Image 1 (cartoon, rainbow, N blue to C red):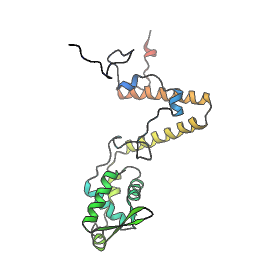
Image 2: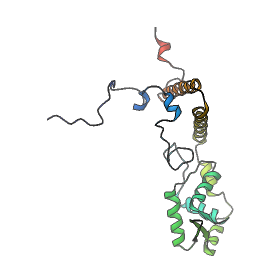
Image 3: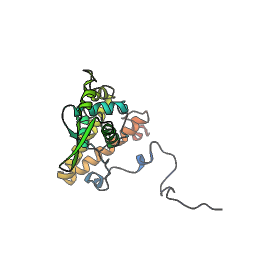
Amino acid sequence: MHGHHTDDTPHPGHHGHHAGPPWAARGDVTVGAVRGRGRRRGRGRPDGFGPGFGRGPKVRRGDVRAAILALLAEEPMHGYQIITELTERSGGVWQPSPGSVYPTLSALEDQGLVTADKAEGKRVFELTPEGRTEAAAAGDGPAPWEDAASSADRSLVDLKLLMVQVMKATKQVAEAGTERQVTAVADVLTDARRRIYLILADGSPTDDPADTEA
């Protein structure tokens, strides 16, 4: 009995094994890609990177709770403001998700440590007297966002920042560059991608099959 064809059937020109992930062999970076057609960006992140990028800092659930209490001890804040503050104060290393911040706020509210009032259509959270007592009990040690920043892999943080800078520069070319400049940038990105995969494969970034041909 013959099996049915599925969307997993290889496209024409597929030859089975190749180095690197499948998308590594799908041609050069095109002018259209630089112009932005068909681009996909991470949702919910100002830098375009999803939560799975690299190895993040070691942050326990209790750290999120302690960080919220510490921030609200300074002033009332709404949920998005808390997320933004933690991201900025950790130097971009710790980017807590709404899925960790809002449930923690709800738990603190249930425990009588925070109250929430509507302001300009947003729920603004403020510590109760009991909440201020608990926040003060944390002492004068490093803030949770400082601990998160110190536990991060700085090399990955620097790589992420560099990627953001490259994205911004490419966007400027896409918006204001000439056709010749856009083509030149596409060539640069194509070569950079090739070199990155060579490094990932434990090769030299200068390795080029053409250089070894007789």
